[in-house]
Image 1 (cartoon, rainbow, N blue to C red):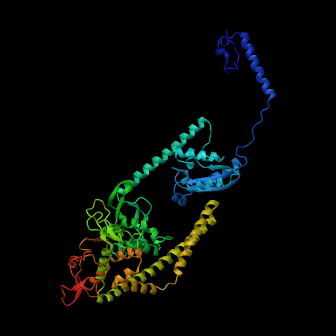
Image 2 (cartoon, one colour; image 1 turned 90 degrees about the horizontal axis):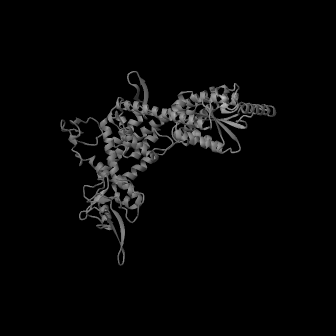
Image 3 (spheres, rainbow, N blue to C red; image 1 turned 180 degrees about the vertical axis):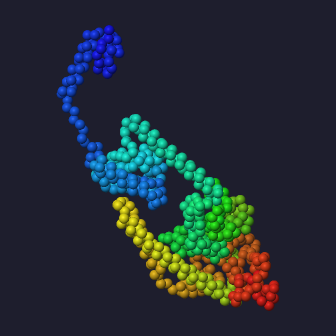
Length: 595
Protein backbone atom coordinates (compact mmCIF):
# COMPACT_ATOMS: atom_id res chain seq x y z
CA UNK A 1 0.00 0.00 0.00
CA UNK A 2 1.12 3.59 -0.62
CA UNK A 3 -0.22 6.90 0.56
CA UNK A 4 -1.75 8.69 -2.44
CA UNK A 5 -1.35 12.23 -1.02
CA UNK A 6 0.96 15.22 -1.75
CA UNK A 7 3.92 15.25 0.61
CA UNK A 8 4.62 18.69 2.12
CA UNK A 9 8.16 17.67 3.11
CA UNK A 10 9.57 16.57 -0.28
CA UNK A 11 7.09 18.46 -2.49
CA UNK A 12 6.51 15.23 -4.49
CA UNK A 13 3.51 12.83 -4.62
CA UNK A 14 3.94 10.37 -1.79
CA UNK A 15 2.70 7.59 -4.05
CA UNK A 16 6.33 7.47 -5.18
CA UNK A 17 7.42 6.50 -1.68
CA UNK A 18 5.75 3.25 -0.52
CA UNK A 19 4.41 3.19 2.98
CA UNK A 20 5.27 6.86 3.47
CA UNK A 21 9.06 6.36 3.89
CA UNK A 22 8.42 3.44 6.18
CA UNK A 23 6.10 5.43 8.45
CA UNK A 24 2.71 4.15 9.56
CA UNK A 25 -0.35 5.47 7.79
CA UNK A 26 -1.60 7.11 10.97
CA UNK A 27 1.68 9.06 11.60
CA UNK A 28 1.86 10.17 7.96
CA UNK A 29 -1.67 11.46 8.09
CA UNK A 30 -1.02 13.37 11.32
CA UNK A 31 2.16 14.92 9.85
CA UNK A 32 0.33 16.03 6.75
CA UNK A 33 -2.48 17.56 8.79
CA UNK A 34 -0.08 19.45 11.11
CA UNK A 35 1.88 20.89 8.16
CA UNK A 36 -1.32 21.97 6.44
CA UNK A 37 -2.62 23.71 9.56
CA UNK A 38 0.73 25.59 9.99
CA UNK A 39 0.62 26.82 6.39
CA UNK A 40 -2.98 28.01 6.74
CA UNK A 41 -2.33 29.83 10.03
CA UNK A 42 0.77 31.56 8.58
CA UNK A 43 -1.21 32.75 5.59
CA UNK A 44 -4.05 34.06 7.76
CA UNK A 45 -1.92 35.79 10.39
CA UNK A 46 0.80 37.40 8.15
CA UNK A 47 0.22 40.09 5.56
CA UNK A 48 2.68 40.16 2.65
CA UNK A 49 3.58 43.79 1.88
CA UNK A 50 5.23 44.32 -1.51
CA UNK A 51 8.48 46.36 -1.35
CA UNK A 52 8.21 49.80 -3.00
CA UNK A 53 11.53 51.33 -1.81
CA UNK A 54 14.13 51.79 -4.59
CA UNK A 55 17.80 51.09 -3.69
CA UNK A 56 18.67 54.24 -5.65
CA UNK A 57 16.41 56.58 -3.69
CA UNK A 58 18.19 59.71 -2.45
CA UNK A 59 21.15 59.22 -4.76
CA UNK A 60 22.56 61.49 -7.49
CA UNK A 61 23.49 60.14 -10.90
CA UNK A 62 27.00 60.45 -12.35
CA UNK A 63 27.61 59.25 -15.92
CA UNK A 64 30.95 57.72 -16.92
CA UNK A 65 31.65 57.29 -20.63
CA UNK A 66 34.88 56.14 -22.27
CA UNK A 67 36.49 55.58 -25.66
CA UNK A 68 39.97 54.18 -26.15
CA UNK A 69 41.74 57.05 -27.96
CA UNK A 70 41.64 60.75 -28.79
CA UNK A 71 40.97 59.85 -32.40
CA UNK A 72 37.78 57.98 -31.46
CA UNK A 73 36.76 60.99 -29.39
CA UNK A 74 37.25 63.51 -32.21
CA UNK A 75 36.15 61.43 -35.21
CA UNK A 76 33.47 59.19 -33.71
CA UNK A 77 30.26 59.63 -31.73
CA UNK A 78 30.86 56.97 -29.08
CA UNK A 79 30.91 59.37 -26.16
CA UNK A 80 27.68 61.09 -27.17
CA UNK A 81 25.79 57.82 -27.73
CA UNK A 82 26.97 56.35 -24.40
CA UNK A 83 26.01 59.54 -22.56
CA UNK A 84 22.58 59.62 -24.22
CA UNK A 85 21.75 56.04 -23.22
CA UNK A 86 22.89 56.57 -19.63
CA UNK A 87 20.91 59.79 -19.21
CA UNK A 88 17.80 58.10 -20.60
CA UNK A 89 18.21 55.22 -18.12
CA UNK A 90 18.56 57.64 -15.19
CA UNK A 91 15.52 59.71 -16.17
CA UNK A 92 12.93 57.15 -17.32
CA UNK A 93 13.77 53.90 -15.53
CA UNK A 94 15.78 54.60 -12.38
CA UNK A 95 14.21 58.01 -11.59
CA UNK A 96 17.58 59.33 -10.37
CA UNK A 97 18.52 63.02 -10.93
CA UNK A 98 21.47 63.54 -13.27
CA UNK A 99 24.34 65.75 -12.14
CA UNK A 100 27.51 65.36 -14.29
CA UNK A 101 29.25 63.38 -17.02
CA UNK A 102 32.91 62.33 -16.95
CA UNK A 103 34.20 61.52 -20.46
CA UNK A 104 37.46 59.58 -20.89
CA UNK A 105 39.54 58.92 -23.99
CA UNK A 106 41.95 56.41 -22.49
CA UNK A 107 42.53 52.67 -22.65
CA UNK A 108 40.63 50.56 -20.14
CA UNK A 109 43.64 48.40 -19.27
CA UNK A 110 45.95 49.02 -16.33
CA UNK A 111 45.61 51.33 -13.34
CA UNK A 112 42.29 53.21 -13.39
CA UNK A 113 43.94 56.21 -11.68
CA UNK A 114 45.78 56.89 -14.94
CA UNK A 115 42.43 57.66 -16.56
CA UNK A 116 41.91 61.42 -16.14
CA UNK A 117 38.09 61.37 -16.04
CA UNK A 118 37.94 58.40 -13.66
CA UNK A 119 40.33 60.14 -11.28
CA UNK A 120 38.32 63.34 -11.63
CA UNK A 121 35.09 61.49 -10.78
CA UNK A 122 36.59 59.88 -7.66
CA UNK A 123 37.92 63.29 -6.55
CA UNK A 124 34.46 64.78 -7.17
CA UNK A 125 32.86 62.09 -4.98
CA UNK A 126 35.44 62.66 -2.24
CA UNK A 127 34.79 66.40 -2.37
CA UNK A 128 31.06 65.81 -1.66
CA UNK A 129 30.96 63.29 1.22
CA UNK A 130 27.49 64.46 2.32
CA UNK A 131 25.89 63.20 -0.91
CA UNK A 132 25.18 59.67 -2.10
CA UNK A 133 25.95 58.83 -5.70
CA UNK A 134 25.01 56.33 -8.36
CA UNK A 135 27.58 55.81 -11.13
CA UNK A 136 26.12 54.58 -14.39
CA UNK A 137 27.96 53.41 -17.50
CA UNK A 138 27.10 51.76 -20.78
CA UNK A 139 28.95 48.44 -20.73
CA UNK A 140 31.19 46.45 -18.41
CA UNK A 141 34.08 46.97 -20.87
CA UNK A 142 33.74 50.75 -20.45
CA UNK A 143 34.26 50.26 -16.70
CA UNK A 144 37.57 48.38 -16.98
CA UNK A 145 39.30 45.88 -19.25
CA UNK A 146 41.68 44.47 -16.66
CA UNK A 147 40.60 41.80 -14.16
CA UNK A 148 42.77 43.01 -11.28
CA UNK A 149 41.89 46.70 -11.58
CA UNK A 150 38.23 45.89 -12.27
CA UNK A 151 37.77 44.64 -8.72
CA UNK A 152 40.08 47.30 -7.26
CA UNK A 153 37.87 49.94 -8.87
CA UNK A 154 34.74 48.25 -7.52
CA UNK A 155 36.30 48.25 -4.05
CA UNK A 156 37.17 51.96 -4.43
CA UNK A 157 33.51 52.79 -5.16
CA UNK A 158 32.25 50.50 -2.40
CA UNK A 159 34.50 52.24 0.14
CA UNK A 160 32.82 55.53 -0.87
CA UNK A 161 29.29 54.02 -0.59
CA UNK A 162 28.72 54.48 -4.33
CA UNK A 163 26.33 52.18 -6.18
CA UNK A 164 27.14 51.02 -9.71
CA UNK A 165 24.68 50.48 -12.52
CA UNK A 166 25.54 49.02 -15.94
CA UNK A 167 23.13 49.08 -18.86
CA UNK A 168 24.31 45.73 -20.23
CA UNK A 169 25.05 43.88 -16.98
CA UNK A 170 23.39 43.42 -13.58
CA UNK A 171 25.73 43.47 -10.59
CA UNK A 172 25.15 40.71 -8.03
CA UNK A 173 27.10 40.37 -4.77
CA UNK A 174 26.29 36.67 -4.37
CA UNK A 175 29.08 34.07 -4.89
CA UNK A 176 27.55 33.09 -8.21
CA UNK A 177 27.30 36.74 -9.27
CA UNK A 178 30.91 37.42 -8.32
CA UNK A 179 32.01 34.37 -10.30
CA UNK A 180 30.08 35.52 -13.37
CA UNK A 181 31.50 39.05 -13.03
CA UNK A 182 35.04 37.62 -12.84
CA UNK A 183 34.44 35.69 -16.05
CA UNK A 184 33.16 38.79 -17.85
CA UNK A 185 36.08 40.92 -16.59
CA UNK A 186 38.59 38.25 -17.63
CA UNK A 187 36.97 38.01 -21.05
CA UNK A 188 37.27 41.79 -21.51
CA UNK A 189 40.96 41.61 -20.58
CA UNK A 190 41.51 38.69 -22.98
CA UNK A 191 39.89 40.64 -25.83
CA UNK A 192 42.05 43.67 -25.06
CA UNK A 193 45.30 41.67 -25.03
CA UNK A 194 44.38 39.76 -28.19
CA UNK A 195 43.50 42.98 -29.96
CA UNK A 196 46.80 44.53 -28.83
CA UNK A 197 48.75 41.53 -30.15
CA UNK A 198 47.04 41.67 -33.53
CA UNK A 199 47.59 45.42 -33.84
CA UNK A 200 51.30 45.10 -33.00
CA UNK A 201 51.75 42.29 -35.50
CA UNK A 202 50.12 44.28 -38.29
CA UNK A 203 51.98 47.49 -37.45
CA UNK A 204 55.31 45.66 -37.26
CA UNK A 205 54.64 44.14 -40.68
CA UNK A 206 53.99 47.66 -42.05
CA UNK A 207 57.27 48.87 -40.54
CA UNK A 208 59.21 46.02 -42.14
CA UNK A 209 57.65 46.93 -45.50
CA UNK A 210 58.93 50.51 -45.12
CA UNK A 211 55.76 52.32 -43.95
CA UNK A 212 55.29 54.40 -40.79
CA UNK A 213 52.13 53.05 -39.05
CA UNK A 214 52.05 55.41 -36.04
CA UNK A 215 50.82 58.98 -35.77
CA UNK A 216 52.32 61.32 -38.31
CA UNK A 217 55.79 62.75 -37.82
CA UNK A 218 56.23 66.49 -37.51
CA UNK A 219 56.90 67.80 -41.00
CA UNK A 220 54.81 65.07 -42.67
CA UNK A 221 51.15 64.44 -43.45
CA UNK A 222 49.44 61.05 -43.60
CA UNK A 223 47.52 60.74 -46.87
CA UNK A 224 45.60 57.81 -48.30
CA UNK A 225 47.17 56.26 -51.34
CA UNK A 226 45.37 53.58 -53.42
CA UNK A 227 48.62 51.62 -53.73
CA UNK A 228 50.31 52.18 -50.36
CA UNK A 229 47.39 52.83 -48.01
CA UNK A 230 48.22 55.52 -45.44
CA UNK A 231 51.39 57.16 -46.65
CA UNK A 232 53.78 59.78 -45.19
CA UNK A 233 54.24 62.81 -47.44
CA UNK A 234 56.39 65.88 -46.58
CA UNK A 235 54.36 69.01 -45.92
CA UNK A 236 55.23 72.70 -45.94
CA UNK A 237 56.59 72.59 -42.40
CA UNK A 238 58.85 69.63 -43.19
CA UNK A 239 60.23 71.06 -46.42
CA UNK A 240 60.70 74.44 -44.72
CA UNK A 241 61.52 74.66 -41.02
CA UNK A 242 62.50 71.03 -40.31
CA UNK A 243 64.70 70.69 -43.40
CA UNK A 244 66.42 73.99 -42.71
CA UNK A 245 67.11 72.98 -39.10
CA UNK A 246 68.56 69.59 -40.05
CA UNK A 247 70.68 71.01 -42.85
CA UNK A 248 71.81 73.87 -40.62
CA UNK A 249 73.14 71.48 -37.98
CA UNK A 250 74.75 69.20 -40.54
CA UNK A 251 76.63 72.06 -42.22
CA UNK A 252 77.52 73.81 -38.96
CA UNK A 253 75.40 76.93 -39.52
CA UNK A 254 73.59 75.88 -36.34
CA UNK A 255 76.61 74.90 -34.29
CA UNK A 256 74.98 73.33 -31.23
CA UNK A 257 71.82 71.50 -30.30
CA UNK A 258 70.64 74.51 -28.32
CA UNK A 259 70.98 76.58 -31.51
CA UNK A 260 68.75 74.11 -33.35
CA UNK A 261 66.23 74.21 -30.49
CA UNK A 262 66.23 78.01 -30.49
CA UNK A 263 65.79 78.05 -34.29
CA UNK A 264 62.76 75.74 -34.08
CA UNK A 265 61.17 77.61 -31.16
CA UNK A 266 61.56 80.97 -32.89
CA UNK A 267 59.82 79.60 -35.98
CA UNK A 268 56.90 78.22 -34.04
CA UNK A 269 57.78 74.54 -34.37
CA UNK A 270 57.53 74.21 -30.57
CA UNK A 271 55.27 76.59 -28.71
CA UNK A 272 55.10 77.70 -25.11
CA UNK A 273 58.54 76.38 -24.16
CA UNK A 274 62.01 77.84 -23.91
CA UNK A 275 64.79 76.35 -26.09
CA UNK A 276 66.62 74.80 -23.13
CA UNK A 277 63.48 72.75 -22.34
CA UNK A 278 63.51 71.24 -25.85
CA UNK A 279 67.03 69.76 -25.89
CA UNK A 280 65.80 66.15 -25.56
CA UNK A 281 63.26 66.54 -28.37
CA UNK A 282 65.89 68.30 -30.49
CA UNK A 283 68.32 65.41 -30.17
CA UNK A 284 65.58 62.90 -31.01
CA UNK A 285 64.75 64.95 -34.10
CA UNK A 286 68.39 65.06 -35.20
CA UNK A 287 68.94 61.32 -34.62
CA UNK A 288 65.76 60.22 -36.42
CA UNK A 289 66.61 58.49 -39.70
CA UNK A 290 62.99 58.91 -40.86
CA UNK A 291 63.82 62.36 -42.27
CA UNK A 292 66.41 60.89 -44.65
CA UNK A 293 63.94 58.35 -46.04
CA UNK A 294 64.69 55.35 -43.78
CA UNK A 295 62.58 53.44 -41.24
CA UNK A 296 63.69 52.11 -37.84
CA UNK A 297 61.85 51.19 -34.63
CA UNK A 298 64.05 49.88 -31.84
CA UNK A 299 61.28 49.05 -29.27
CA UNK A 300 60.02 46.32 -31.62
CA UNK A 301 63.53 45.40 -32.86
CA UNK A 302 62.81 46.57 -36.41
CA UNK A 303 66.25 47.30 -37.94
CA UNK A 304 66.93 50.33 -40.05
CA UNK A 305 65.84 49.93 -43.65
CA UNK A 306 64.73 51.90 -46.66
CA UNK A 307 61.32 53.51 -46.26
CA UNK A 308 58.66 54.07 -48.88
CA UNK A 309 58.31 57.77 -48.02
CA UNK A 310 60.31 60.67 -49.40
CA UNK A 311 63.13 61.98 -47.21
CA UNK A 312 63.62 65.71 -46.73
CA UNK A 313 67.41 65.35 -46.38
CA UNK A 314 69.90 62.94 -47.93
CA UNK A 315 71.32 59.89 -46.09
CA UNK A 316 74.78 61.48 -46.37
CA UNK A 317 73.55 64.58 -44.56
CA UNK A 318 71.96 62.43 -41.84
CA UNK A 319 75.29 60.62 -41.41
CA UNK A 320 76.98 64.00 -41.00
CA UNK A 321 74.43 64.93 -38.32
CA UNK A 322 75.18 61.73 -36.39
CA UNK A 323 78.89 62.39 -36.71
CA UNK A 324 78.49 65.87 -35.26
CA UNK A 325 76.30 64.56 -32.43
CA UNK A 326 78.93 62.00 -31.50
CA UNK A 327 81.59 64.70 -31.63
CA UNK A 328 79.52 66.91 -29.34
CA UNK A 329 79.10 64.06 -26.87
CA UNK A 330 82.87 63.69 -26.44
CA UNK A 331 83.52 67.41 -26.16
CA UNK A 332 81.98 67.56 -22.73
CA UNK A 333 79.47 69.83 -21.09
CA UNK A 334 80.00 73.11 -19.34
CA UNK A 335 80.84 72.43 -15.71
CA UNK A 336 78.32 74.14 -13.40
CA UNK A 337 80.24 73.61 -10.13
CA UNK A 338 83.20 75.83 -10.93
CA UNK A 339 85.93 77.19 -8.70
CA UNK A 340 87.71 80.50 -9.10
CA UNK A 341 90.82 78.82 -7.69
CA UNK A 342 91.01 76.23 -10.49
CA UNK A 343 89.45 77.64 -13.68
CA UNK A 344 91.12 74.98 -15.88
CA UNK A 345 89.58 72.07 -13.99
CA UNK A 346 87.69 69.75 -16.39
CA UNK A 347 88.98 71.80 -19.38
CA UNK A 348 92.42 70.17 -19.39
CA UNK A 349 92.74 66.40 -19.78
CA UNK A 350 95.47 63.90 -18.96
CA UNK A 351 97.95 63.38 -21.79
CA UNK A 352 97.95 59.59 -21.17
CA UNK A 353 94.35 58.50 -20.47
CA UNK A 354 92.40 61.54 -21.72
CA UNK A 355 90.40 61.91 -18.48
CA UNK A 356 89.77 65.47 -17.16
CA UNK A 357 92.26 66.76 -14.61
CA UNK A 358 91.01 67.92 -11.24
CA UNK A 359 92.57 70.52 -8.96
CA UNK A 360 93.30 70.83 -5.25
CA UNK A 361 95.36 72.76 -2.75
CA UNK A 362 98.29 71.26 -0.86
CA UNK A 363 99.33 72.80 2.43
CA UNK A 364 103.05 73.40 2.93
CA UNK A 365 105.00 74.67 5.91
CA UNK A 366 104.42 78.33 5.18
CA UNK A 367 101.94 78.49 2.30
CA UNK A 368 99.42 76.60 0.17
CA UNK A 369 100.32 75.22 -3.24
CA UNK A 370 97.84 74.47 -6.02
CA UNK A 371 98.10 71.43 -8.28
CA UNK A 372 96.24 69.82 -11.17
CA UNK A 373 96.40 66.03 -11.31
CA UNK A 374 94.80 62.94 -12.88
CA UNK A 375 92.51 60.92 -10.61
CA UNK A 376 92.14 57.89 -12.88
CA UNK A 377 93.55 55.01 -10.80
CA UNK A 378 94.43 52.86 -13.81
CA UNK A 379 96.39 55.67 -15.51
CA UNK A 380 100.19 55.76 -15.45
CA UNK A 381 100.02 59.42 -14.40
CA UNK A 382 97.61 58.82 -11.51
CA UNK A 383 98.18 61.51 -8.84
CA UNK A 384 101.15 62.99 -10.74
CA UNK A 385 101.08 66.66 -9.77
CA UNK A 386 101.16 69.56 -12.24
CA UNK A 387 101.77 73.02 -10.81
CA UNK A 388 98.67 75.18 -10.98
CA UNK A 389 100.52 78.32 -11.98
CA UNK A 390 102.38 76.51 -14.76
CA UNK A 391 99.22 75.05 -16.32
CA UNK A 392 97.36 78.37 -16.24
CA UNK A 393 100.31 80.51 -17.43
CA UNK A 394 100.92 78.21 -20.39
CA UNK A 395 97.26 78.50 -21.34
CA UNK A 396 97.53 82.31 -21.32
CA UNK A 397 100.56 82.02 -23.62
CA UNK A 398 98.51 79.78 -25.92
CA UNK A 399 95.76 82.40 -26.08
CA UNK A 400 98.22 85.24 -26.66
CA UNK A 401 99.82 83.45 -29.58
CA UNK A 402 96.57 82.85 -31.46
CA UNK A 403 95.15 86.35 -31.92
CA UNK A 404 93.71 87.39 -35.26
CA UNK A 405 96.01 88.79 -37.91
CA UNK A 406 95.60 92.46 -38.72
CA UNK A 407 94.17 91.89 -42.20
CA UNK A 408 91.48 89.48 -40.98
CA UNK A 409 89.24 92.06 -39.31
CA UNK A 410 87.47 92.94 -42.57
CA UNK A 411 86.80 89.25 -43.24
CA UNK A 412 85.23 88.88 -39.79
CA UNK A 413 82.96 91.87 -40.44
CA UNK A 414 81.99 90.47 -43.86
CA UNK A 415 81.11 87.07 -42.42
CA UNK A 416 79.06 88.69 -39.65
CA UNK A 417 77.24 90.85 -42.20
CA UNK A 418 76.27 87.81 -44.23
CA UNK A 419 75.16 85.83 -41.21
CA UNK A 420 73.14 88.75 -39.83
CA UNK A 421 71.47 89.34 -43.18
CA UNK A 422 70.42 85.69 -43.18
CA UNK A 423 69.17 86.10 -39.62
CA UNK A 424 67.02 89.07 -40.62
CA UNK A 425 65.52 87.03 -43.47
CA UNK A 426 64.78 84.30 -40.95
CA UNK A 427 63.04 86.83 -38.69
CA UNK A 428 60.81 87.97 -41.56
CA UNK A 429 60.08 84.37 -42.45
CA UNK A 430 59.23 83.67 -38.83
CA UNK A 431 56.77 86.58 -38.76
CA UNK A 432 55.12 85.25 -41.91
CA UNK A 433 54.73 81.82 -40.31
CA UNK A 434 53.33 83.34 -37.12
CA UNK A 435 50.78 85.35 -39.13
CA UNK A 436 49.69 82.20 -40.99
CA UNK A 437 49.43 80.34 -37.70
CA UNK A 438 47.33 83.11 -36.16
CA UNK A 439 44.96 83.10 -39.16
CA UNK A 440 44.57 79.32 -38.93
CA UNK A 441 43.81 79.51 -35.22
CA UNK A 442 41.18 82.20 -35.75
CA UNK A 443 39.48 79.96 -38.32
CA UNK A 444 39.63 77.11 -35.81
CA UNK A 445 37.92 79.27 -33.16
CA UNK A 446 35.06 80.03 -35.56
CA UNK A 447 34.66 76.33 -36.38
CA UNK A 448 34.64 75.37 -32.69
CA UNK A 449 32.07 78.06 -31.92
CA UNK A 450 29.81 76.71 -34.66
CA UNK A 451 30.19 73.12 -33.39
CA UNK A 452 29.46 74.22 -29.80
CA UNK A 453 26.30 75.99 -30.99
CA UNK A 454 25.00 72.92 -32.82
CA UNK A 455 25.73 70.21 -30.25
CA UNK A 456 23.03 69.10 -27.82
CA UNK A 457 25.41 67.61 -25.26
CA UNK A 458 26.48 69.84 -22.38
CA UNK A 459 29.65 67.80 -21.89
CA UNK A 460 30.75 68.16 -25.50
CA UNK A 461 29.90 71.87 -25.43
CA UNK A 462 32.16 72.39 -22.41
CA UNK A 463 35.00 70.59 -24.17
CA UNK A 464 34.58 72.84 -27.21
CA UNK A 465 34.62 75.92 -24.99
CA UNK A 466 37.82 74.78 -23.27
CA UNK A 467 39.46 74.25 -26.66
CA UNK A 468 38.30 77.69 -27.81
CA UNK A 469 39.81 79.31 -24.71
CA UNK A 470 43.15 77.56 -25.19
CA UNK A 471 43.26 78.53 -28.86
CA UNK A 472 42.41 82.16 -28.10
CA UNK A 473 45.29 82.35 -25.60
CA UNK A 474 47.67 81.03 -28.24
CA UNK A 475 46.46 83.68 -30.71
CA UNK A 476 47.07 86.42 -28.11
CA UNK A 477 50.58 85.08 -27.47
CA UNK A 478 51.43 85.05 -31.18
CA UNK A 479 50.10 88.57 -31.74
CA UNK A 480 52.08 89.82 -28.73
CA UNK A 481 55.31 88.40 -30.18
CA UNK A 482 54.54 89.84 -33.58
CA UNK A 483 53.88 93.25 -32.04
CA UNK A 484 57.24 93.43 -30.29
CA UNK A 485 59.22 96.33 -31.79
CA UNK A 486 62.86 95.40 -31.21
CA UNK A 487 65.75 97.08 -32.99
CA UNK A 488 67.75 94.26 -34.63
CA UNK A 489 70.70 96.55 -35.20
CA UNK A 490 71.52 96.93 -31.49
CA UNK A 491 72.22 93.21 -30.71
CA UNK A 492 74.03 92.88 -34.03
CA UNK A 493 76.46 95.70 -33.31
CA UNK A 494 76.98 94.51 -29.73
CA UNK A 495 77.63 90.94 -30.85
CA UNK A 496 80.06 92.06 -33.56
CA UNK A 497 82.04 94.20 -31.13
CA UNK A 498 82.22 91.41 -28.54
CA UNK A 499 83.20 88.75 -31.06
CA UNK A 500 85.82 90.93 -32.73
CA UNK A 501 87.25 91.98 -29.36
CA UNK A 502 87.43 88.37 -28.22
CA UNK A 503 89.19 87.20 -31.36
CA UNK A 504 91.59 90.15 -31.42
CA UNK A 505 92.54 90.00 -27.75
CA UNK A 506 91.34 86.74 -26.13
CA UNK A 507 93.70 87.12 -23.15
CA UNK A 508 92.07 90.28 -21.80
CA UNK A 509 88.58 88.81 -22.19
CA UNK A 510 89.64 85.57 -20.49
CA UNK A 511 91.06 87.40 -17.48
CA UNK A 512 87.97 89.58 -17.08
CA UNK A 513 85.27 86.88 -16.82
CA UNK A 514 84.28 84.50 -14.02
CA UNK A 515 85.25 80.84 -13.80
CA UNK A 516 81.82 79.73 -15.04
CA UNK A 517 81.98 82.12 -18.01
CA UNK A 518 85.46 80.78 -18.78
CA UNK A 519 83.97 77.30 -19.03
CA UNK A 520 81.50 78.52 -21.66
CA UNK A 521 84.06 80.70 -23.43
CA UNK A 522 86.51 77.82 -23.70
CA UNK A 523 84.24 75.75 -25.96
CA UNK A 524 83.64 78.76 -28.16
CA UNK A 525 87.39 79.09 -28.71
CA UNK A 526 88.41 75.42 -28.94
CA UNK A 527 87.03 72.29 -30.58
CA UNK A 528 87.44 70.22 -27.42
CA UNK A 529 89.31 69.78 -24.16
CA UNK A 530 93.09 70.24 -24.30
CA UNK A 531 95.61 67.59 -23.23
CA UNK A 532 98.49 68.87 -21.10
CA UNK A 533 101.94 67.28 -21.33
CA UNK A 534 104.37 67.29 -18.41
CA UNK A 535 107.36 68.79 -20.21
CA UNK A 536 105.77 70.32 -23.32
CA UNK A 537 102.64 71.93 -21.95
CA UNK A 538 99.98 72.50 -24.64
CA UNK A 539 100.84 71.37 -28.14
CA UNK A 540 100.98 74.14 -30.76
CA UNK A 541 98.44 72.28 -32.88
CA UNK A 542 95.79 73.10 -30.29
CA UNK A 543 95.27 76.65 -31.46
CA UNK A 544 91.95 78.41 -31.26
CA UNK A 545 89.55 76.83 -33.75
CA UNK A 546 87.56 80.05 -34.22
CA UNK A 547 90.67 82.19 -34.80
CA UNK A 548 92.19 79.59 -37.10
CA UNK A 549 88.98 79.51 -39.14
CA UNK A 550 89.09 83.23 -39.91
CA UNK A 551 92.83 83.16 -40.53
CA UNK A 552 92.31 80.39 -43.11
CA UNK A 553 89.85 82.60 -45.00
CA UNK A 554 92.75 84.78 -46.16
CA UNK A 555 95.26 81.99 -46.79
CA UNK A 556 95.55 79.73 -49.79
CA UNK A 557 95.36 76.38 -48.00
CA UNK A 558 93.57 74.88 -45.04
CA UNK A 559 95.50 73.23 -42.24
CA UNK A 560 93.00 70.39 -41.98
CA UNK A 561 91.97 69.43 -45.53
CA UNK A 562 93.55 69.23 -48.93
CA UNK A 563 91.24 71.69 -50.72
CA UNK A 564 91.69 70.09 -54.13
CA UNK A 565 90.29 66.83 -52.75
CA UNK A 566 86.99 68.40 -51.67
CA UNK A 567 85.57 69.15 -55.14
CA UNK A 568 85.76 66.72 -58.09
CA UNK A 569 87.05 69.46 -60.38
CA UNK A 570 87.91 73.15 -60.05
CA UNK A 571 85.12 75.54 -60.95
CA UNK A 572 85.92 79.12 -62.07
CA UNK A 573 84.63 81.86 -59.80
CA UNK A 574 82.75 84.60 -61.64
CA UNK A 575 81.40 86.40 -58.58
CA UNK A 576 82.66 89.44 -56.76
CA UNK A 577 82.58 87.84 -53.28
CA UNK A 578 85.44 85.50 -52.41
CA UNK A 579 84.36 82.05 -51.17
CA UNK A 580 85.67 80.48 -47.98
CA UNK A 581 88.45 78.53 -49.77
CA UNK A 582 89.94 80.19 -52.83
CA UNK A 583 93.18 80.46 -54.69
CA UNK A 584 94.71 80.70 -58.18
CA UNK A 585 92.48 78.99 -60.69
CA UNK A 586 93.96 75.94 -62.48
CA UNK A 587 92.20 76.71 -65.77
CA UNK A 588 92.51 80.51 -65.59
CA UNK A 589 95.82 81.37 -63.81
CA UNK A 590 95.03 85.08 -63.77
CA UNK A 591 91.74 84.57 -61.89
CA UNK A 592 90.79 83.45 -58.41
CA UNK A 593 88.44 80.47 -58.03
CA UNK A 594 87.04 78.13 -55.40
CA UNK A 595 89.34 75.17 -54.87
